[in-house]
Image (cartoon, rainbow over all chains, first blue to last red; front, side):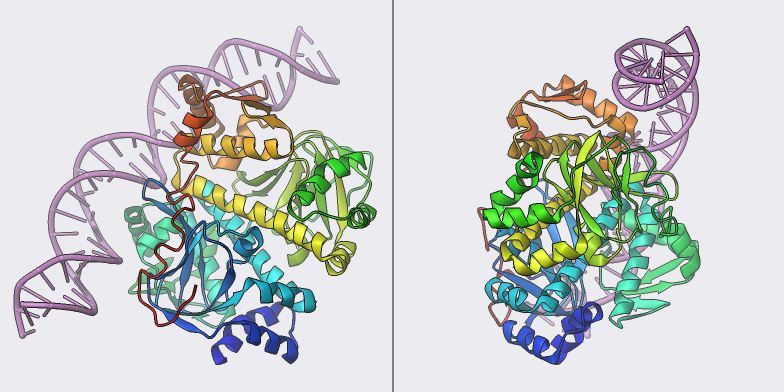
Length: 253
Length: 253
DNA sequence: CGACGCTTTGACACAACTCAACAACCGTGG
DNA sequence: CCACGGTTGTTGAGTTGTGTCAAAGCGTCG
């Protein structure tokens, strides 16, 4: 209960403040927290999407295994993250899901969750918001892998990770714990583990970022952010600037 | 109205059959269809997410521009596709959106859409399903770019595209129209346009796929699918096989 | 007609991968 | 206690896939 309050509820609250009644309903719908060991697979691609998982503590990852033995990690989940909503909607999971460290996890069955969505618009809104946020991160990872060099990619990943962890109080601006092995980073960022190692050395020698013994230290956040290309071309300041670039007979804005 | 019925309604219907009343409500909420010319930008990254766009005819793309002048296309939209729901939920668009060909597009404002979601659970379900499907495609693209070679990537992309187009009756099993330039393919698949050209030649010489004058011909679907690694390791037959790989005290399934 | 966008090709450079080897660290069991 | 295998990190040498640069062919459209 403590964990539940601290992780999911805290995160959902940050979008749509939930009443104590809504929190109670959520808490009734969820399973008891379960401890799972590192490596434990909780969901296999192709399985029926019967429930969502909520990470209360530890790290987990969503990924797809390919025929040639490689894998692509879609995303890492940390405390407060909800996984599998898409699988519930599509009825079958389109990715696998495993604990990356020892973790504490609970579940909510599809049926009661859908009922909550129907009865409590704010709970629905909060989940949708959270899932939209995850999707935005997936799109950002697409940009990472598609258009950034390995160094930028890794830099970008850690900047983003730092922000995520800070949101839930698990990082301070200069450093945080990160139990991801170089193999996992490689599978998430579309690189080989060996190259990840080389890039990490490079970032260390440039005095940007040090990864050592499961601890990440951001040496120079400004330089790192700049290096990663963290902001995009517009930075949001030129809204609608080009909206009428090509002519059209009607106003779509 | 005709188009609206044929595109969005048809697609939504394929998931959650909508009553004529629900279709009417949807149709009342949407704007009149608007013709936009190729290249027209409809939404710019960072803009307020005030509405969703529905493609009725033609092709469009969602993308992010990077500081160094490159871009990453997140997805292509075709008739029946809905874009911008995420932007509405997160309140600001996390990507830009443009017409890739001359196109016919209508919009639904955020407020009436949310009201529809509240009043008509099946409309809500249909939109959520559609957006979950899009998200699954984004994840698949991530796998493409992260773990497949350029040739596999392109092969995979066209197999997936063929299936999408067939669903809305715009492709037959052997061929379909595709107005995407090699530059657009490159930006979607994390490649350079020049390399896309080389790979297309390669696929042609292997007698797998011919792309010529905006027309894609699939020469050998079986070989192409095999080549692309379209199916993943499990194919869904071994549900739950590994769910108990590492021990745990409680049942999460 | 010239300008422009898209495709095609070649030569070359370089980022990232593979293979191979070794070091450091861990928990386990003899 | 130490030996052990397994996992992770580190480094080097060589290979290859893909990007870059440059140039030419070709439609189309104004």
